[in-house]
Image 1: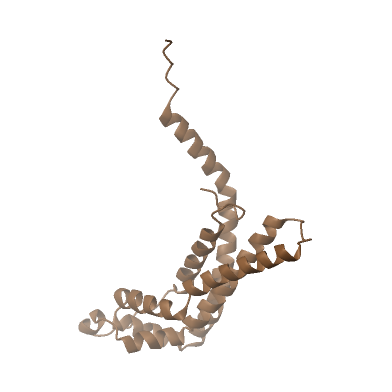
Image 2 (image 1 turned 30 degrees about the vertical axis):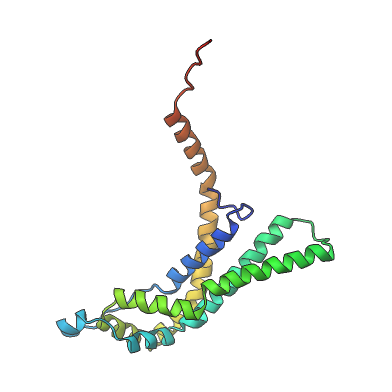
Length: 194
């Protein structure tokens, strides 16, 4: 499998980057509130989950990620075109149509209507009420607000660094895969003469 943006899996790579960004953008260290044992195990209320999503500006983070993914797609297309920028009006129209298609795919994937339900489900199944309360307290602090403001940049920079590392490692992995396949297949059996 090639992770080269010029490969046919480019669209899949954009979606994978988006998922990684979502995971990074919603992950940080939290201090757990020291409450009663029963409160520590209690499922969080939907109200507290919605409050957390509001405080962490999850909707805005999704919009930023969508914009970054759109820019990534645009860069991939420009790389495919290379030095060829003298497009005919028909080619330019086709390019814009495909770019809108990609932007629509991204917007649909990261729409608040679908992602809010996902967040509510995952957070509700993962965290206790005490943990949600602890997060809300943390995000009310200056440090918490800084985390909220800077996570999209952290996600973008992490993706960029990871992409470089993966690109450096890919030729070695491809060579290893080739050698593994050759070893498993073994030598070609001799053909019997007729």
